[in-house]
Image (cartoon, rainbow, N blue to C red; front, side):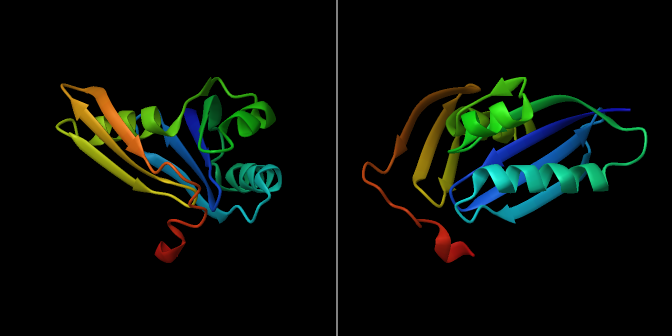
Length: 137
């Protein structure tokens, strides 16, 4: 059975998710990045491998987050996307009528405006705000 791996390496947390062909969540991990994006990506991959059902093969990998390019090189990603695109596509996939996405991250916060399935505008804080979302921990 084929599956797809998504990796989001952020400044505060590293998230990995595996979806099967039926779009069902098979594995999900939420790890603290701890300033070590390489190590946490590698640790996440090991944990995904341990939790993956027998006979399931990862046939595509995508990365996002503040360390998306680094993670993409580590895993040989098929696709590397910014957070704005990733949030919008994810929201529209699960909630097709989405018009607004708000993200409070560890490094910045974003608002994304969607009209007719297309990102029409977005805003981010304009100064460094490390730890912005740390209160959510």
